[in-house]
Length: 405
Ligand code: LLP
Image 1 (spheres, rainbow, N blue to C red):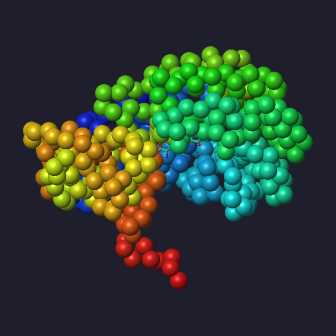
Image 2: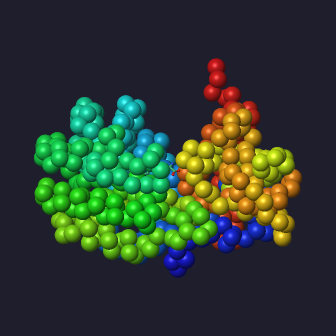
Image 3: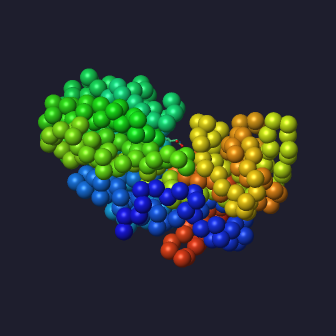
């Protein structure tokens, strides 16, 4: 029922991936809904008493959202668009937390208008201004305060939020703000998020954040929940161990201590990362002096994480058999030197037409795809048991200009 702690790129069935690439063409995202279910189940077993939401920003595809909902996770949404997607996928207002980060007026307008029918929806505000703007719109519903706990963690500086001034109300001001907010809102919780992609060696930071949140909860009196965010890392490298989720859960409970509130967590990456791969084909092979370049049809517009954070994603050549390994740079079709999926990685000698699979592409993969260089976004297939279905069709060239007047 609960599946293994990790699904490696090597565990994916090569023949099946080949058949999908032949049928749907490349670049192609593949999302395995069974693995999404397993990951959701593992989270629920590790945190049996907690409220577990899925941070939908990691992958907002309808098939994934419906799967997560059926697996009994709730939804943490970061924008009006994500709230709309969650409602469309069948989440009720009471299952939705909207985390407002510098929310544009249109987002607040939309969320408050949907809240009128779904009045159990929770809004998480990270600035005094946001409370003012919510009052102006007549919102008097369930409110949580996002705290800046002064401690952050994560796989890259760009995704560490916990100690960054942009996020949350400074720790020392939260108690007073909460007391004020109780006059106008139904104050239900406090929230903090250290950052994304927290590895085993950063668990101490996670514990410190949780400890501070526990202390704050005890000082402000009864609440419905204390949300300590998401951020659980997954192993991107083949030789990296997965987090011991049970140990993380124990450490979280211990650090929180006794509070008159329920623990809440909201992981995104953990639910979907290893449930997805990206398939891409080699179209050009160049033996340069320094490296062998495998030109492929996916690049920074398909999967931006390597270009944006220098992130490592495992790459497997599904056609190479026992060809010798040599340093290979896998490069996309965009005219920027940063447009690479890896540099000088020991991979089998590439040949034109080879199919490559890129691992852990389920989180922040399709979601961050763009149409830069006027490149249509890829298609995505959802696997459900033995079935495969097109979950999002490939964007067309005609669609790229559709918004122009
Ligand atoms: N809660 C809040 C308030 C968040 O801002 C985030 C992620 C999460 C939960 C979920 O974090 P996760 O469990 O997925 O680590 N694009 C980056 C990741 C950005 C995450 C932003 N916030 C990447 O590709 O690594």
